[in-house]
Amino acid sequence: MNDPWDGILEKGETILWQGRPDPVFAMNRDEGIMMLFGLAFSGFAVVWIAIVMASGAWFWLVGLIHLSVGICLTLYAVFRDTVARRYSYYTLTTRRAIIGLSYPWTKPSLRKIRITPRTKLSTDHEHTVVFGLPGRSKRHPYPTRAPQFSRIDDAEKVYHLMLQIQKETP
Image (cartoon, rainbow, N blue to C red; front, side):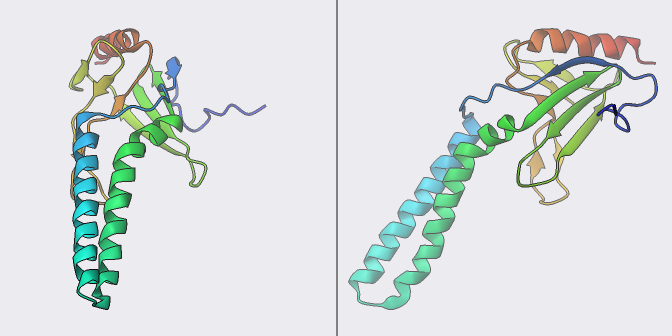
């Protein structure tokens, strides 16, 4: 029988912890701000469509594009993180943190972050461990959030395991 970790784990690397995030619906402050912007964008589009329709012009159809963009932005803000957590898997090894994402509509992907003494670690002492620094995405110019194991039950344990890895890494 084949080991599913063949080709992923390095020689001598072992798994210390595995887990999944809590899939229950939750929103943070940034998502709330994006949702409010999407609602305001949609609301402005509705008002604009109503004014143009009242004047009898057919140009109101252009407003449907803006309305749909506002609705999509609102839905994206509300559901993006919850959907991502439902398809995420976390693994901590003796050398790396691995975040797996397996949406049913795309091929699975792994993000591997090496834990070194220089890796910045933090935790909220409740359910999230953040490791590394925010960066930039290859697909868009906006800053990305730091890699993290979010909404896990044993965040304190994982955080201390990462600190131990940092101490043992030369």
